[in-house]
Image (cartoon, rainbow, N blue to C red; front, top):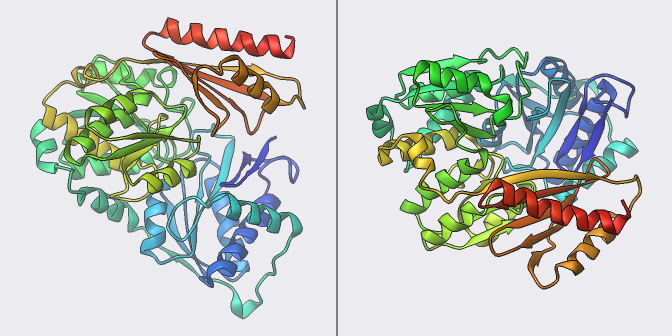
Length: 461
């Protein structure tokens, strides 16, 4: 059993004893704490709630909604939804905050409470710590009977979200319709099975091959949209001679594509391609996290903009985007953040922008991929003894590479001329994550191994 309490929410495995897994007692405690914080901060009693389709979703939803009522908060219940849909709904409903019930790409055993502020953005470090403190001290009161909150079901946000995407200036429905795309979709049996086909139809895509699009929470494969988990989608694309395949994670904020030959477009290149399209029409700055591909920097510079790196985590990327007035940003895990819609990763907006780009280029998706700089990424980790001083280790590695360009805003990233290595400690395990990128996979693996050997020598392994 696992329970992880972080500034952006509470996630864990379903079952087990209180404070060891995401038990009903933990769900109630943290939900009540969040409700108290929202009312304390704003006097606003309204909170938007939505969930993905995982098996535990209905149970967690019942506990969350009932708890919010019990502390006097009114709930707008979107039911089966997506993370970006809830993010859009919060400001539209003039709510004080939102809760998304999803463990994102984690397996079916997991669920989580992701917490949003009144802007529909993830709460910051300060607010997150306040929620944890209120929950641990049980510093909240339950409402008396005439002060209980009310619940309003609202199933209109599927269409509202689609309308929001269609209204984007750079989304060209006629160009997409004229391209006559044949598209295969893998939604891992979660809410993307509702939202993605509906969006594609609204965009004029008439031929859609659906696989794992029944929102029953029975994940047929690991829900993280990586190549090794998308073999069925790749086969379907080739079998049906589709123009591309689309895969999303259970809460539809991560997006990746399969090319017409069944190969992956590359999760890292989702943001690169969408950014290329945006920058072509609206020059400006871009942001991604330190562990994302260098290709975004290259594309940004090509269009005359400036690229900025942020610490890993959506809230950090959003903060940096606002600071530098970025026109597009996101994360290399397939997360596209387009401020013209909202400051959150949104696979639906990403799909519409990407298909417009592909249609206007009049290229096969593999041909489009070939227009971007070729980089390969290697992801590794070094396991450490519990209690080991990881910060000291990273400082000593920094000393080894003090003559190279490096950043310490999130662990240690070392930028070499043709490659980079990013070292950061895990928030949940006694490990150092080691990400590297280079023009070839063998180079990426070689530079990672070199730095990992430096670390092993420092810890005497």
